[in-house]
Amino acid sequence: MFNIGGAMFGMGSNLRVGLDIGTHSIKVAVVEKVGPRFRLVKWKCHEIYTGGDRYDPEGPKKSIAVPALAKIFGELGLAPKSIKHLASCIGGLQVSAKEISSLMQTEQEMASSLLLEARKHIPLDGSETVVDYQIMGDDVKEPEKVRVLLVATTRKLYEGHQDYLREIELKPGIIDIEPLAVLNSYVIHSQLPDEGVIVFLHLGAKRTTLAVYGRRDTFFTRDLPIGGQHFTEELMRIYGLDYSEAERVKCTTGMSPNLEKSLGEGGGLGMSDRTTFEKLGDEINRSLRYYVKESGQSVFTHFVLTGGGASLIGLDSYLSNKFNLPIELYNPFNQLDSRVPIDSVNPYQMAPAIGLAIRGDL
Image 1 (cartoon, helix red, strand yellow):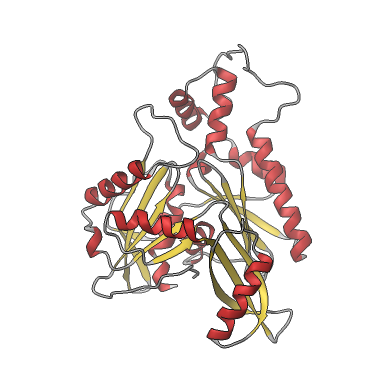
Image 2 (cartoon, one colour):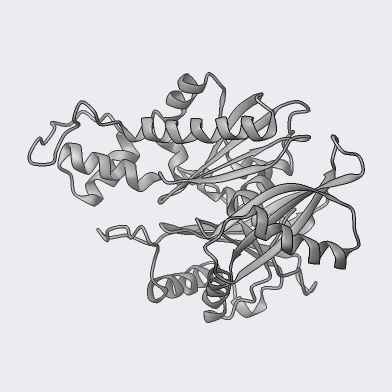
């Protein structure tokens, strides 16, 4: 559907590989096209921090991530040099995307004019940028124009991501952005509403990526500064747990475990404190209010939850009650035929990798 830089190359193999390098884990999906559908051939989710290692919110250092990548491809039986169809993704505060309307132009004219438009519409920190665009269709409000999605990131992030791949002899191929990778996995066999928009929430370790998308309405995405790590830290603070125990409690019993609170110095919740659930809800509400103001669209059909944090006990009911909307816990494996067992207790975190793997045919 969308990409920034890169192109599909090499047609010697029908296998397509999607790679999602997160701050907490690395996900890989390998698919093949069989008729009108995709078949899952191999997949793997590898947690970077194990054995009591504490999560680094800045993400794994290159000295940790590169050996982990090499190990994963070795365990999957994939020789990086032989992979001809690879798509990966980037995300975070140094990636921005915005939909605009533009007069239809030649490809050369469009590329030149939209570079100037990106500087107006996409806030980055002044660093050298990489910009790309995707035409999304006719503008229903202005028939002489087309809808265009502008995407930009810093050259430092873009080239740094490529360096990670080249370290194990992977050819970078398509580089997408995280929210669009999630959407790619969803729209391949799921229906978008004719009226209104869906709210996608991808809950990662460091942040939550919100995206709003529908058939006829403006695409919007924003990073929210709350992720799974913040829930872990809340448990550590309230119950006096160490990191590994707080992670275990979060995953098995949620944010209201039957534990005796440790109310030593810095422990417990004060009367003015807000829970991480509430802080996340406030961030979502603020973003949706902004979307309504900018787009004029206020019909949100439902939430689609993906990411490692999507399975957090109580999150779906909290969001449903707060926003009075249905919640869909999206399992991307359901979109695929499969040749391999799918035994993941948290399939939701595989959405970007699967969206990337099928990226070449959209």
